[in-house]
Length: 469
Image 1 (cartoon, rainbow, N blue to C red):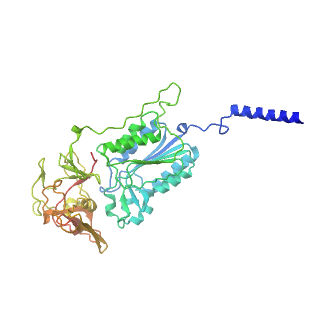
Image 2 (image 1 turned 180 degrees about the vertical axis):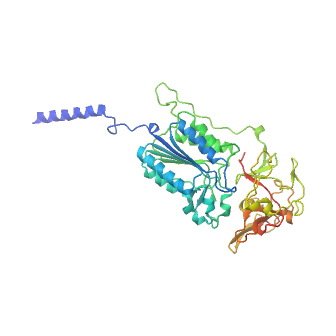
């Protein structure tokens, strides 16, 4: 019996040893390298928001450029543009089903307007702004980030990459009621993504992403550059994007990402960095700031004053003309006196039929427009350091308080603004909802905003969404 027991033990030990030598540790098959799994992407760019006030020039371009690069990297790409809410929801659901069936790696990219309300981030479909009147309606007319994450999580695929270039909101919140203190430009950030997710944001929480001068945004330009480098993991790609965008925007735009990944995913497998005899690519150099001679602006607080008669506000990403309409930029200052009689214009002249008109090209840009009342308020400077806000008949007002200099605007940045009278009053693009013949204006006499009859002739200062240099 004892000898039989010894033989049984030897038999089972030999069987275990054979299995150990033939079966990889961890099961009957080694986990497949995540970088070699099926790759699928849903890429959406929303530019045409059915209003000149909200339209964006680059999101569709960015989506087209990224989709082409992802196809080159082996992704099966669904590329869509200018989607309404129903179409966005349908596309997200179809993408999740594709991931559920094929497993593998999913990548979701959205470029367009985005907003944050009550700690939730929303992607804005192109039909939302013709419906949105109150901040509380956002959950009904926009796409919540949490919905996207939970839908993709339900697919139970191996890994998901979510890239949100959806922070380009400078004018969007001006006409939404009830968002005071709760509604902000840009997106919040999900610092605790679901398991096996990595989420990249084009800007930090609440910040606006720059649209860019050319056909692509700074974020997508740097993303494409990083994707073309062999051997980089997704984390390395997003670190390079962050470094490049911060240099390009002088630290104004700071991309973020948050990860719960347990595997390394490499986009570009042209070089197998782990193969025997193959030298891995050297770490990519962090982009360096431009040399001093390339700088063509003077810094004054949060303003970058350019040599061409424009100025960029680094807080908002808005580029302003330093001179009001009717004045002339001399190369050093604004010549011409602003008065109701000589330079004043009615609201119907500057906003015919309530729409933005085409203005003459200036400093190489042809997309100048009349600012919203919210944008115009950002120019108010209270030297007393005592701005105040109050509500009256459900309308919000703002002005300076205490002992302050007039006009209430930085007179170095915006020279020759009169301290009082019709030369210090400026139209906004915002119609007054409670009276069809009135529109919002701002007086730089005391920084107060109000409304008046559209036939009143006052001043105009033009703005555009620019890139901080």
